[in-house]
Length: 319
Ligand code: TXA
Ligand code: MG
Image (cartoon, rainbow, N blue to C red; front, side):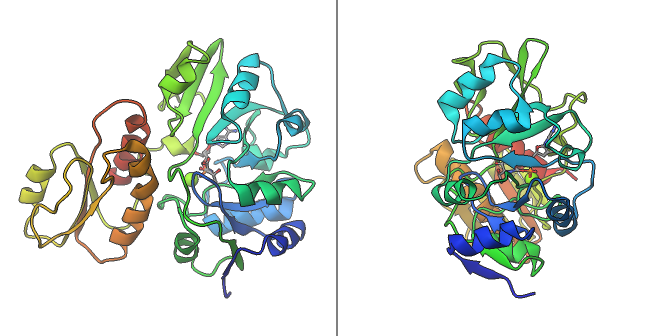
């Protein structure tokens, strides 16, 4: 199939209304979007992503008023979080209503839902009368795409259309939160950090290994390039150890290549975590296309958003 990359919103809407799945821009990463109320579209998403059926899909809606159609908001903290952060990169786990198929939630009682903060995504969502499911538009276990070109490269002619909304602003997937007893749990860290959420609800904790909610984003190996990858705080030491190999190096603190035999990208010339998140997957896509023996990535100094970025780097490295 020939994949068209285009900014034609009307074409995107027409395809979605016809149960097709398309590449879909958001502020975090590109999604593989389809009608959340259409079994055909849902099946197609699992097929294109080669995603195991026990891995549920995130719902994307246009406005807060629609929330009660698809889920029960049983705790007011979600309304407060929505007021503060939506549209934006935070996803809530809430008990689903009967409108949402068990195929979306992989037979779990809760559905994941968010309002994306991307002008084109919102225009699409406001012009259809159904919500979209949109997991990241990468094959299962590969790096999430942050541009239309990444989607095309990763899905290799399996979809006919990618709505081009430019390079994703945030660059890593949304923060996922859910309530357990009276505690808010962060199941997947993101650019909205524990500290940001604490200001609204102090009883919040990070738990990315809780087995009671199975979020495959928590699986150890995830978001991985095909090239082997090492995550480290000691970049020079690792480079010396592997100096006989064709190396790709991604650094945060050091701006110049340690020597000129390896390919080097600097995650953030401004030493800024937002910029590092924005660039991470793009650099991994580039390095993974270069036939290297090994990619070495420097972990960021801990604090705030570093939790989310280091989580993705570590997952890319696990074998
Ligand atoms: O930023 C994002 O969240 C992007 C953009 C496209 O919106 N989407 C995204 O989707 O990252 P995905 O499917 O790649 O990651 C969603 C994660 C998966 O690990 C999935 O298992 C988990 O959320 N998840 C979805 N529904 C769930 C549920 N009902 N219970 C527990 N985990 C759930
Ligand atoms: Mg994903």
